[in-house]
Amino acid sequence: MSLALIIIFAVILISSLVGVYAGRNVEMNLENWTVGGRRFGIIIIWLLMAGEIYTTFTFLGASGWAYSKGAPAFYILIYGALAYTLSFFILPLIWKLGKRFNLHTQPDFFIQIYNSRSLGVLVAVIGVLSIIPYLQLQLTGLGFIVKVASNGAISSQAAILMSFVLTCAFVYTSGLKGAAWVAVIKDVLMLAAVFIVGIGVPLIYFGSFGKMFSVLIDKMPEHLIFPGATANMDVLWVMSTVLLTAMGFYMWPHVFGSAFSAKSDKIIKRNAIIMPFYQIPIVLIFFVGFTALLVIPGLENGDLSFLALVNQTYPAWFMGFVGAAGAVTAMVPAAILVLFAATLVAKNIYKTGFKPEAGEESVMRLSRFMVLVMMALGLVFAIFFPNELVNLLILGYDGVCQFFPGVILGLFWKKASRNGVFWGIISGVGIVALLILSGNDPFLGINAGFVGLVVNAAVAVIISSLTGSKIIGEKKNA
Amino acid sequence: MKKGTKYALILGAIPFVTLVFALPLVNRIHPVVLGLPFLLFWILTWVILTPFILFLAYVLEKKFNPPDKGEDN
Image (cartoon, rainbow over all chains, first blue to last red; front, side):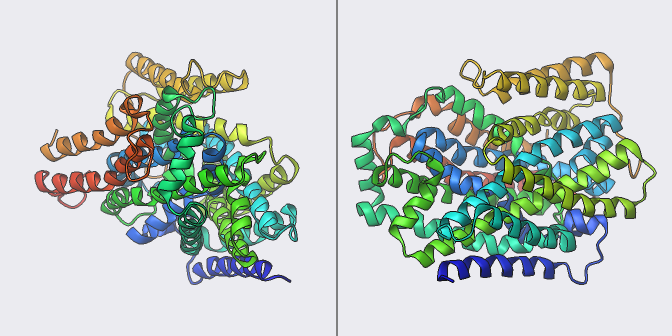
């Protein structure tokens, strides 16, 4: 067994054990499982949210986009900073409502604010449907990284299967706390890999960042401004996309839900301040993509550029290290995604939709069982349809973005009504699906999700104005 | 609106102005600053400045808004 393999196995196994260990002596009720008992301080919240944000898509996608698309990749750097700025103002308010009404999930929030179970079920269904391709992407990415890093010794399927079992184990036993603990390991490894490679490769091949860029400016200047190497990702696309993704970012059910796990609203606010620092290393990932473009041009799949360049530049054991970091980087978001998808199904589809009288214990039991079901779904998709869900992920992102008007109107506008928000979401999602599936994304140069969002907000406002006021539900457990 | 909240909102608008609405004006390679093409330099600068802007907003909110008396629901 090679050193690279030993490193990959050891890291994956140790991380999972840490995740399982995190849940010892914690009685697993819904509160502890989904929101960590609302006890997380600033450091663990930071690591957890960073754990959700830095996924395999960041790892492979940011370098891949820089490699094959050029400047449009910069949107990845921008939207985070905007999302954290929004969260500074909005998330503390959401946290307060969560604390006051004992909310665990995003649909809980909608049910509480609009006093409408059907709205809760709708939000839960769209949330779960959006999460599945995201989960699948993590598993596919993991299989891909481990396969390349182990030089083919471990097949994608074997890697996915192994991580499936281990991730299920620590989500099942420790819930969100398990994911948070593993996130610590993941962040350290991931950042180390990004810093070493991101600073390393431009220096090794060109002597400095500046020299790398001056060669790139000489050879292909258009690559470094919008629309880069693409035909339809010009400035307007970037502007609409960063606005959309910034608004959608905290609308992912798992990111939204993580906000409830903080100890106080102050923690949330301070977290928003320090989050943008986490965004900066992304620029190093771009450097890797750009260096790869000059050193190993012509790769068919740009997403390979990071790994291909590491493979060519560093010793084999380091490739094992990158593979291990990449694997854990997929496992943490996968764990959080599966946890929230499972809770949505159990609490907000099963209980809210069909069996309001279900007790907490049975919801908890079903949540745990749904972890296995959701993970299995992701696994099936990842193994049998590895390439076909990337478009669904875009649809998923555009889908969760449609929650934004409902959240904002609910927080700040007394007249927002359940009917307005319900039909707003339906029309927003409908428009997005129509535009994407008919090949009209971008639509007139604007991101299709953004078009949906505008229609959604307009419908919500108009119907709300006509149908009167919302009632803030005072029921303790809606 | 409380004075601190107003200041915070004005500060919070800065990243949106610089990182979204100013993009058509900065979509250029030259001048190259610190070795970076201008577009990337501009974006990176404002991403790095965002936490400091938010910190200032936090401080101003604290200074001008009366402190919460326990739970302020």
